[in-house]
Length: 572
Image (cartoon, helix red, strand yellow):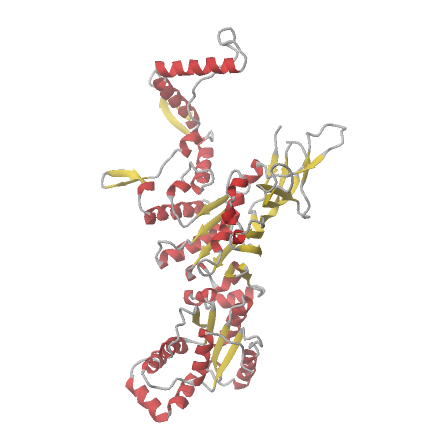
């Protein structure tokens, strides 16, 4: 019996539903092709990756794949449920010439027997659903001519189907051993399988000399076979031959044959490896100043560099169809290398799916906000928030013009204050420190957006993720010089972003920052302070003035800072 499995290119996990697994009490999420999981420690990011890896990243999943420690709240009455929906569906038939069935959702339930002698004991149920969400039906037996076809539900994931959903996991423990070709699901193994296929091409030839000394061309496969036979002959000592005979005689007896009379019916012997076996046995070695050792014996930082180098080699060869899970890709990397690896992940996601958990703003991008999922945790468990803001090319192009890694920090903020430019960006943290506010401890971030006109887009993005957001802007901005009527309409639009529930607060600075500071300090004091810091730009001057102890803090700035450090509902 031969099975038939067809897999469309660029397969990905489309949807994930998890219940009662670790911190994930009830979670349903759409999974982008490139998916950044962003959130504080212990929010549940790793648990999402682990859920996928537990059910799809192993060759065999059974009840032992889970434990009571994995159940939400360690509640013995709860069942773990994980459902993975892929797109496009996989076509599968248990018989070579049978009509294929489309498989789209794979479900796993860690539950208990309800009746019988095993009542109360844990078991693992598997379910396979078709694109309609119904149990997948496959042929019960090979189709025969003029015979009505019989079907049965598919109650497990066949090995050949599982192979079509290659899940590769790179955890925080960057052990190179897990990524060498001997590991069943490793990037290096997939790369070397391609190398092995190339090795078997008839075009792969080498020049050898025959017994008479004449040169001739033979395929690499032929040459490999000749060399392996020579090696085997060398290894075939008297002890090895005796071991072969012993195994053969005992095997024949166990099978009901006479070892003497039936010796010619079956034969048992040791044979050399296939080419792929040699590739799978390869180790990564390091040689420095004449000293050689396995790279697996080196430190985590060195092993991490090799693992990421393998990942980049995988991308360079444009391998496709894998689901790659990565925890903290930024580990051990300088900012420049983080940016480089992020570009690699983006290219990988063109033909694979990449899901990763990160704490680094170098692995997210404001223009690609639809690729970010915010992960938060409350007493009810882990929650995941995707942006509700529609994407379009015009919006993306506008945001690309304002691309700045510092602005990517908005995704990591639990409280956010948006300002027009560098003047507020530099001065506000100084005022916050003088007020005794710890913005970092509060998870608050001040983001300058590169001008007043950019405020609405950043406000929409932050609001779409449910991030409490404050906005501080100048009533009269130099961007609208000679277009004050247009600015009045724009100011009204900004003010209307404020929400009754306090999720978004807006503070309009009368006229502009400098004028508000002037009125707060008084003309004489303002001029004195400005003259104290000659020869510097306005942003730096604003920061230096803010540092002067005893000077009054402008009212609107103080209101915004107190809110962003501890956002309260809008005052009536």
